Image (cartoon, rainbow, N blue to C red; front, top):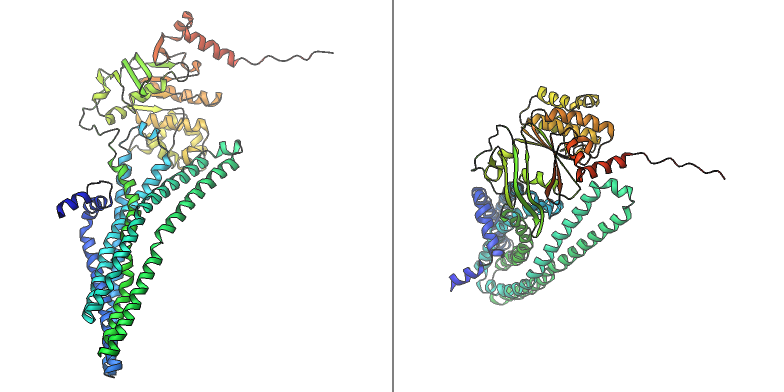
Length: 602
């Protein structure tokens, strides 16, 4: 019977019992020594509380029955010592629980961040980054809060209640038994609130994530927001989300604090009954006043821990919403599983070959269709074509951000799916159109190209990328902060720092994705010079919309609808008069100055 009850209790992995057990086994177990010390200190504090309540009776008897002043003084000194011990014990357990909680939060933040790094790019494409920030802060803290709630409930409240009930039982066994009759109705009414609390708490988390989402988008898109005068629109959107969260928080307050009047009313009836019965015993049966006051003191001191224990299930289920959020991230199977056991990629020439490669981001919507081409070692291979043809997807597959659905991608005859991702990516330098710079200095961003690079190597890479001159022109030189996403630098400056970072990596294979597409002519000329340094002696694959940037490429592939439709050098493709010629002529017409309008004379 008992076994089947526990099986049902732990059957639901997302149920309160199963989650608490998991927290105890996975996170509290590693801190058991500290928890044991905190629990012992709680026991000392609980015993001090109970002993203080017991001594109240002796003080009353010494004062009113025995008229013994020296006895009162001794008891007063003992009481002072007891409360000093209680204060030290309470302080010790609070500090210990805080240290344990901080360690658990830090460990969970590390676990969540490490888990996020195990996912591929596609995992994040369907989610907003603010969701992960909310999960990192809410989920990591929730585990500590729930564990502290469990420990304090059983260590502080339960031990205090047991000690005080023992005092009550010693002073008046009958009345102490009658005093617990208020517990069943309280538990029954609180049980009905739990499901409502769980739903509201989940809505609160969702609402908080939505507020973070709007705030992040507004800050990151401030230029667009200002340019399109979207202040009122974004303010209305933000106010709406805040109002929704406020409404859910008010619902939570109404439900969560509904137990307060209930417990106060039941406690009031219990105290009233104790007063009547205790007074009757003193007046009619000759019981000492000390017994009555000791019982009453213990009963009133037991009221608060009893109320907290009655609310335990309610508070526990509210906190477990955050724990579920934490475990949703930790338990999610990695979409980019570890492959350190696979052999490393060993390059000799860096010859890249796509053989009948197929890929779709979503089922039934193929982006790459039987794609085959070869990028010769030490040469520049260009991929051109209309937007949406699959060019950037080729880079995504080469870097194994996504896995090909069919065919093979070989580098020096080695299928990249059969080697470790780390060895593959460590031998590829990637420069994209939208350069991402990390918060920090110019030096720190360049140094990310290779760990442990010396100052001379960083400066040499910057010089080769035509970045040294503008960097040294800054008042702080290489220590100049780049700002969030590099917003304190111009577009051409960001690009050259990214190229310097790639140069420092010194990889044999270079991927350039529209590296000059968003630059003006002067910046493009400077970046092109940096790219020439980067590509010397390396296998380079370039995605380009501006065809004049790839006229000197050793091989040009025209990509349309996920496959190669033309291939050759610039002059060869022009002579054929095919798709490449159409693209080239279209760009020439776009670059021609508009005709000058001649005013007619009347």
